[in-house]
Image 1 (cartoon, rainbow, N blue to C red):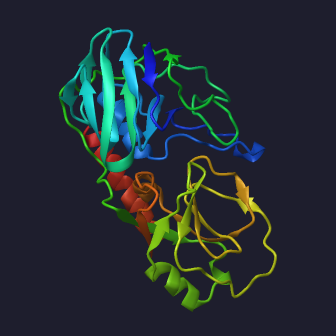
Image 2 (image 1 turned 120 degrees about the vertical axis):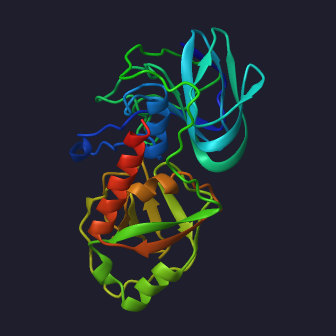
Length: 304
């Protein structure tokens, strides 16, 4: 069990996601940066889908109420265990009564704290993930919260072994995308503007989506659009013309024009962006997307 002493800005429980219910309008949720979430779990010997704590921008302070092994992966924060500095992307032993404190963020936006056995909170619709929009799976952590830790592990923890798979963006990222079903509604000039512009993550961005600030896009064909499925990474163009990038807690359907979809691998980099960071978009094909996914999976499992 762990006790939350300070919750940080926005710390939530996230596992692999609430899959299989999108036809009912239930978002998947889960970690915004799936890669770092999985790295943290693999470091402590968990199944990669086990529940972790996702800390956004300002991390928590927690007390370990049992001996355990933990790891923090993803965004880089100053970390102290009982007052001694510890590294991210490395499994460490924590004593009963030990205190882990997050300090200043130095890179990225989100970090994932995994404990051997996983965070063991009640599952809702098959997942322990917190969906902030619907309220499924609880709410952001608060001071005084106590969270149970499970006992099941798939392998031995990699104590003292450093593992890093994702290169953190430095002030921004270029995100590769597949052309979407409504791209035909935009002129070639508008598509050129989209792929040659630098957008900024707006201040009202959240786990549902990033509102991007920058050059607006006008549709050449503004005929009515039927609402349809919206996978994670969908890039929508609302009437304002400023793109919206859908993230983990996004709605399951939408009626805005879908100009493209960010590939799975690059969604992890997007998850490490903070308000004010820049984004550019680069078109790719299905083969590029598959090759990138295979490469990241090989990096994850070859280092496991």
